[in-house]
Length: 319
Image (cartoon, rainbow, N blue to C red):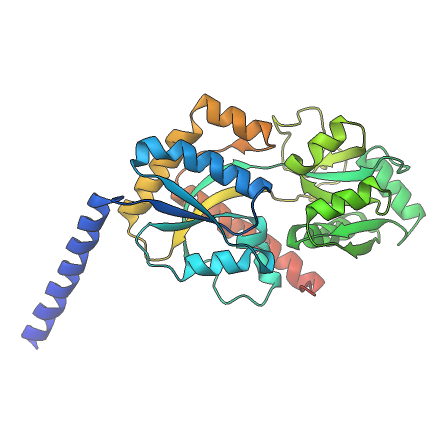
């Protein structure tokens, strides 16, 4: 029996020493950053900005690999199943690491990943077509109450679907959901006057809003953003609780050694504190938000708990 305990202790010690040695040598080769969406979108842009900025302190290239499909779950699944050595990570967002609860996914959002760090907060904007009768959130609610079920709302992803449901619950109104495969086609439909409303990241909306082609009714973030400081939040507009979460963060597979997670996080924080990186992210509708892995993990747990209740109460499922 004593020998068994001794053998087990030696095995545990060997594993600890091996893990520490791997962490000390990390990274000895390029790190692959999985983007779970096609090239050219806001997630891809943010990944390339942060990957480039991490390279000097990381000491190795960050290779961007786009693995799109199934609302981002294909790329995320690959990371969940990757070796926990820090060489395969992903850039996630609300859709992939919170909103994925509406899909039949093969991974556990809280157990299969090691949160590395938050990258940015991305304002989620409630937008209306150019000729829509309302010019702000109060006006929209009044119009929807006077015209129940007549407003059309774009359903282009998990975030849009859940936010639309929350808007109905928060305002006591009804809207008609119109499905679209992505924010790009949805925005084109709005520009053509085919749909009334949509919730979308600032990066997608701002060029059209600045050109006067669409109207921003509200910022659905908890606080005003440096990206759009003049746009009031939903709470300021008298609709507390109507909050849509937008962010980017990096994730590693579960069981990745804490030393490796800490190394990756330190490189992220250093990159995000670079004024040029902050500027580039801001130009793309995102506000740099460096922090620790524990802070990011706490935020993620809070998000999953909050939105899980909304999804369950409304019985929201992907079509």
